[in-house]
Image (cartoon, rainbow, N blue to C red; front, side, top):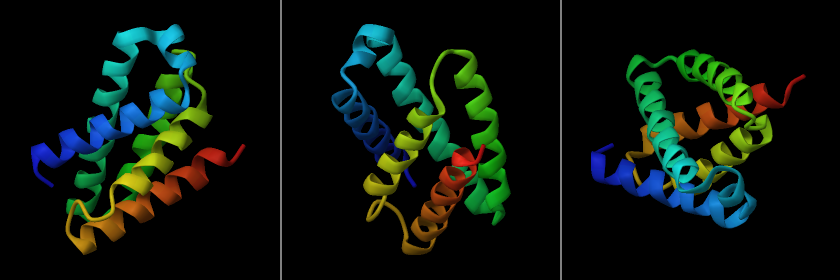
Length: 117
C-alpha cells in the first residue's frame, strides 16, 4: 500500500470517528484528531507488517498493546473496536485483493479479541 493511500485511509477514518463522536472534539480537541489520524497510520503499518510476515499474531499482539496504552490515556476499548470497524469499511478496494483479505481478517480477529473480557 502506498503512502498516498495510507494517508487517505487514515484521514478518512479519523474524520469518520470524529463525525460519529463529536464529544471527542471537546475531550481531545485538534490534538486528539491528529493523534487519531496518526494512530490509523500505525494500525495500517502493523497490518502491512503482519501481511508481509504472513503472521496475523503480529497484529493481534499490537492490538492488545494498543488497548493497554490507550486505556491508560482514558480511551475506551470500544473506541478501538469502532476504529477497526471503520477500517474494515474503508479498506476494501484500496489494496491488492490478497492483502485486503488478510488485513480484514486481522481486523476482525482483533475486534473479537478486544471484545473478550
